[in-house]
Length: 269
Image (cartoon, rainbow, N blue to C red; front, side):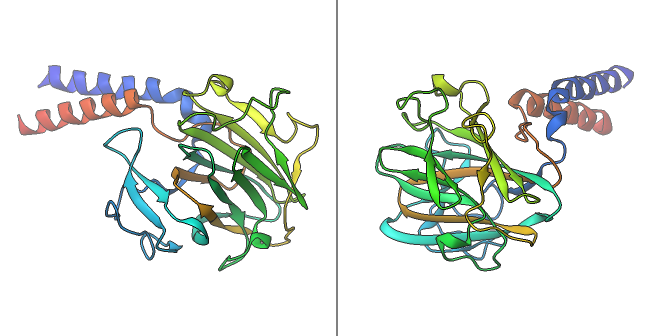
């Protein structure tokens, strides 16, 4: 019994050590990871707070089974989906939206970002807006126009050049109505490390909201026209610029499971 107790404590201690590099992301709150309450192949409308067109569906991750993600399936028809944030970004605060996105071929056309509008259904309802356009990959709205992603000073250095998942951090300054954007992808050699692609690291200035607001930002808003496109792992930090990764490391989960198993074995003994 003492041995099992010691092993369990050691396992939990190891978990803490593995998880410690992620302490910067402690303030992130899950918006949705599409793992609970969804039926693969079915729409998300009415589930976990979503208001969504039928073209937004829960599907198996194209990168492999074992993970459920959100897919937009329509072609050439603009459709909307939105969900209230679990915590809001006050008009005196910074905040960070974390998400993962993917599109597997050129010609996709989609938008995602944040809004203060209760039932958004128009592009003008975006405060902070990201956009994927045919042949241009990722863009960001800067006030009245879009800025195209060229983080490395080259027109060829664009996210989305291959079918892979990207992590994205949309850092919102709801005090000054501006935002910044960082991305990272293990599958794209241009972005294997976290890179600021819009904002202070690109042209010297943060991006301006599409529509300014004096209210709290309280909705995740997706507005797309051409699929398939994929999203997963939406998180929000409503109090700070947060460049941590809120998704648990596989190693952390494995060690935690081992510790839980040892504790259960001790109880049965």
